[in-house]
Amino acid sequence: MAKWSEGIRRIVQVFSVVTVICWISFVGIDSHGFSQITPIGWLIIVGGAVVAYFTPQLICIVTYWVIDGFRKDKGT
Image (cartoon, rainbow, N blue to C red; front, side, top):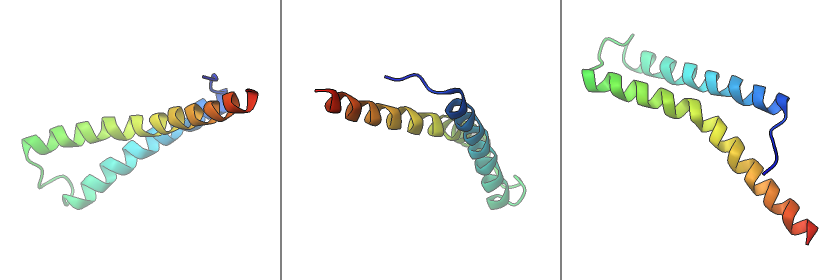
């Protein structure tokens, strides 16, 4: 699989941070300022933040994997 360019790596990092900010903002708005969150809810928030952080990276990995497959088919 091809190595990511520096620009793509930086874009993915920015999107990762933005998705975490969006997730925490959504939860804050939906729970009326985090006032209606139970202890298990805090675990869900943290787990959701981790998933939100890694989702753009996973999308980039899958995209590079698919593009690499087309490059290999083209070479045969």
